[in-house]
Image 1: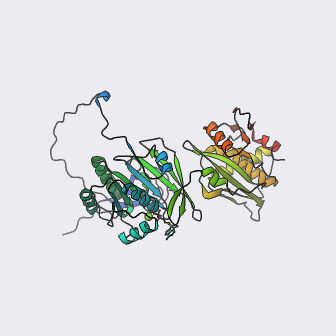
Image 2: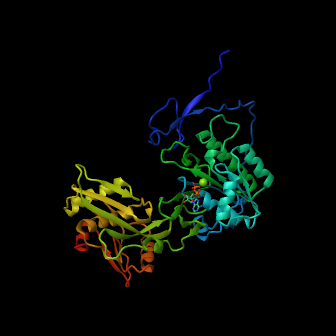
Image 3: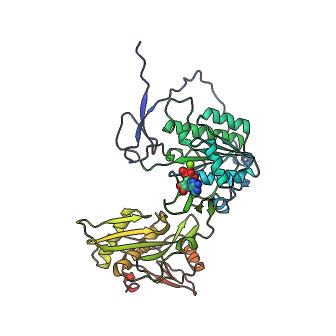
Length: 448
Ligand SMILES: Nc1ncnc2c1ncn2[C@@H]1O[C@H](COP(=O)(O)OP(=O)(O)O)[C@@H](O)[C@H]1O
Ligand SMILES: [Mg+2]
C-alpha cells in the first residue's frame, strides 16, 4: 500500500506567515530565506457541538487572580526595568544572540530567587555538569536551585509538576521538542507549542517562567518574533563581542512600561549591574578630539550619555565607503545627503565611518544631529567642546526638530557635568548654556 505523504506547509520563521509553496522572500514581513517547510499537525475532529452559556461579568466584580506583588530578581536595575520586579505567573522571553550572556544572567537570577523558593533551571542546551560549573564560577550554588538537563517537553513538564518551583528558566526554547509534534526542535510549530505549554503551566500554577530564545542573524531558527504575542514580557539582550557591557531592553511588558533598560558588565564572576551607565559609557571619551560628540540617549525613561564618533577620510574607491556601528546605515546616507545639501560640502570623495562607543544600537531620531555634528567635526578636524551634549531630529530640508524626553536628557547631562546643550529646545536653565538650533547650517557657527 502506498504510504500517505505527510501534509506540509511553508512557514516564515520571522513572522509566522504561511504559504502554499516555498518562496525566497516572505511577502508579509519582507525577510529573505526565512520560509521553511513544516509538517501540518492534524487537528482532532470536533466530536459534537454543544450550545454554551457564557455570562460576562462587570469589571467592578473582578478581582485580579494574579497577585501583583513584585518579586525581586536580585538586580535592582533589572527590577526597575521590569516595572518593580517579576509578578507571579509572569512569562518572560529573554532573547539574544549566542554568547551574549543569557544563560549567565538567568542562572544568577535563578540563584537569587532560590534564596527564598525552589527554582528549576531547565537546560536543554548544556549538560547538568556544565550548568554546575557555571554556577560554581558565578557563586550561584544553592540547595534550592534544581537542574534538569532535558530536551523533551513532556519530561520537563513532569519535572515542573513534581518539583513545584516558584521560578523556572527554560534554556532555550529552540532546543526543546514535544513528542506530540512531528516537526523538529526549533521549528515554528515546536517553538510555539513549547512556549504555549510553558505559559499554560506558569499561569495555572503561578510560576515565573524565564524562557531563553536564541536569535541568529541568518534567521534559520524560529525567531522569537513569533513568540512575542504569547508571552507577557519580552526582554532583548544586546551587546557587542569584544565589549564587556550588556544591555537588557524590555521591549514588551504587560506589567510595566516597555522600553526600559538595565545595563550590565560581564565579568568572569557573572553579570554586574552598571548603576551609572552614563559614567560608564563616556568615561573614556578623548578630550579635545574632533569627530566625537556626546549624545544623551533615552531608552524608555532612562537617559544614558553615549559617545558618537565619526571618521571622515579621503576615499580610494570609485564609490565612497559608508560604515556604521550602532546606527542604521540608511540614516547615515540621509544625514550625509542633508549635510551636502545644506552645508554646501562635498562628501562624495570621502569615506565616512560612524560608531557609537560601547556598541550600543541606537534607532531613535534624536541621534541625527549628534551624528551630523560628529561627521562635520571630523570633516573639519575641529573638536566639539568637551562639555557639550547634542541631540535633535533632522528633517530633509535641514530643519532640526525637537524630540521627546528633552528634560530628562538635559537633567542627565547636567548631572554629568555637561554645561552646553545643542538642540531644538526652549528649555531654560541658568546654569546651562542652551543653544537653540533650528537649522543644521547653524552648526557652522559652532564648528569653526
Ligand atoms: N570560564 C569563563 N570565564 C569567563 N567568562 C566566561 C567563561 N565561560 C564563558 N564565559 C563568557 O560567557 C559568555 C557566554 O555566556 P552565556 O551566558 O553562555 O551566553 P548565552 O547563553 O547568551 O549564549 C561567553 O561569551 C564568555 O564571554
Ligand atoms: Mg546559553
